[in-house]
Length: 260
Ligand SMILES: Nc1ncnc2c1ncn2[C@@H]1O[C@H](COP(=O)(O)OP(=O)(O)OP(=O)(O)O)[C@@H](O)[C@H]1O
Ligand SMILES: [Mg+2]
Image 1: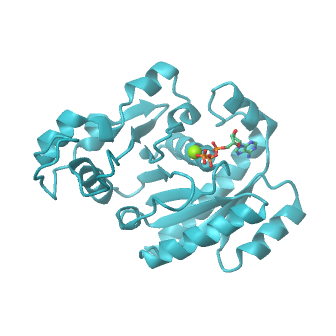
Image 2: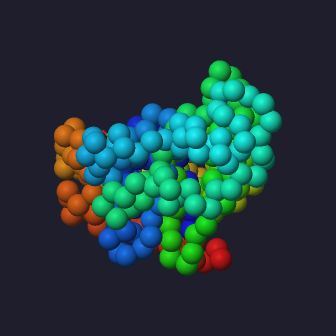
């Protein structure tokens, strides 16, 4: 299954992405985690040391590889192949972090060239042709907001998860994401509520989400907050957080299995 995790800034997209990735990897699944946020910080959340984080070069900066596959060097313009070979990119460029294979997308837009450039085409082809077998999971940790949500992403995912908090503004963003996702052809959009303190928070979120199904909730956790403060992975720091993650993970698996 391929999941995209999006939502308003700071709601917990990276925390959820890293948590699901570590949990499924621990269960023996092959997990490919993709940091699709140019302001990348999924590596740290997964538990990478700063050295390992630095060693994972974003795909958009792999000029030699992009030139080899597309026939054009990033930034130079010119003709390029629209269907570059990408089948081996995970093996070539993935970094193992505690059993999770991490790839960073990086920033595509160089000098306003938009996506009609060799590197944009390369990244789109990579996402589109990312093969998943049986139990494999691909998790895309998206940039906040909605501007970056295009058909390239939509074509590549089975399930869109919007993370919300018990706040009106984050739920507004969820509705924007959901509308856009439907417009670009993603039909399954669900929400996960993070930092819900109590039943009243959960009831509020559920009501305001309207027809966006709520797949699960995650409580606020001092341990999770402290792990981020200290640059550690939040995974495994707090049993209540891990339990909530497990419940969300099962709900996601059930939903994607049913959709097949
Ligand atoms: N359940 C939680 N309990 C306590 N703190 C949390 C929880 N979930 C996330 N946080 C904290 O909230 C902050 C934002 O989390 P995170 O980076 O995962 O959000 P994000 O949506 O990925 O942000 P961005 O939009 O910047 O990418 C971090 O400091 C994180 O540690
Ligand atoms: Mg993030």
